[in-house]
Image (cartoon, rainbow, N blue to C red; front, top):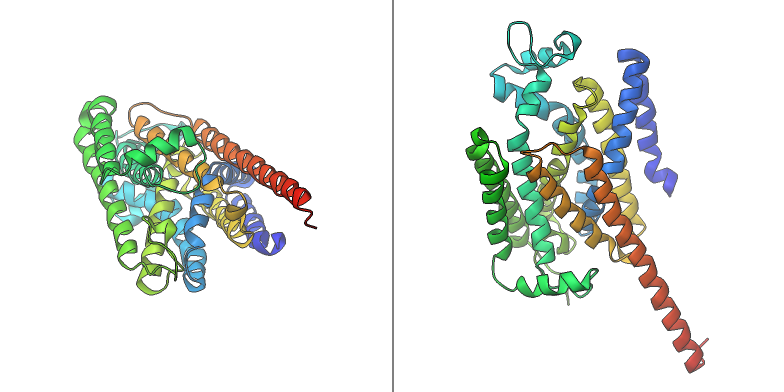
Amino acid sequence: MVLRIFGVSFAVTVVSLVVAFLYGGPQALFLCLILGILEVSLSFDNAVINATVLQRMSEFWQKIFLTIGVLIAVFGMRLVFPLVIVWAASGLGPIEALDLALNPPADGAAYFPDGSPSYETLITDAHPQIASFGGMFLLMLFLQFIFEEREIKWLQWLERPLAKAGKLDQLEVVVATALLLITATVIAPDDKVSTVMIAGSLGMITYIAVNGLGDMFEVPEEGEEESRGPSTLAKATGKAGFFLFLYLEVLDASFSFDGVIGAFAITSDPIIIALGLGFIGAMFVRSITIFLVRKGTLSDYVYLEHGAHWAIGALALILLYSIGTHVPEVVTGLIGVALIGAAFASSVYRNRRIAAREGAEAVETGAP
């Protein structure tokens, strides 16, 4: 099963590295490999969340996400999206934006001799609005999860009172709005306050709209109680499946924003970024998602979903904080890995404890 699931990703990795070598020699190959490794290591929480939603989708929509969704992730977010930012910020056409990306100023300067900004500078300058949109979208996802009453709790001392507080209707919107105001007035640079407010509001509106559309077409399985959020939908088909697909694409994009911006600390070449983040990184994230669904990992290790959501909460806050202060991508990744690792360890301990209790009960009752 492992080879069948990850085989395509390994093949794409080899092809991508060969293309990188032909494109820019050993240096391009090395940069491509580094970007791919970083994307995979920092996106495990993305894969876990994707799996929680994907396992609720019909087989048809799973295939759509794992095919068309991959193309959107690879070409849309890792190649086209940065070019669109440059196009919007500079007023250049798509061809001119690509030319600007492929022909940076000498010696890695931020500006050309005529004073015009480089491709990398334009992307970096757009970070506040990107981080605000993505941060608020992910924050809404996290808040909805922790404010919802659920049978299984990981950090009971914290999740129990939060779930009780969540009985207050629309509490996640209140908290998210308050954090957005704090971000815009305290963290954001003075000339970016309105930009951060608008982008953050759009992030919240996007989450509420896509989530609401998913709930609208929800069809619970027989005997299953309705609950909030697209991650709890029954096997979705038709319009419900489409809106879950749309939800996953926006979610994936929100995860990708920080990685795309952070990639410019390694290289500003859009081809290398597309090969490393897109073809290698995105493909492996998809393979990990499939593996989690096919193996039923989330059912076996019940706290993984909790750990991934807490990692999302940390990422959302880091994105908002990074509007005013740079945060190394390694820090973001390590926090996510630590939370998911702790959730996995707690799940293993829980499974062993249940197995030991069942074994003791079997001995007492004389059951085989």
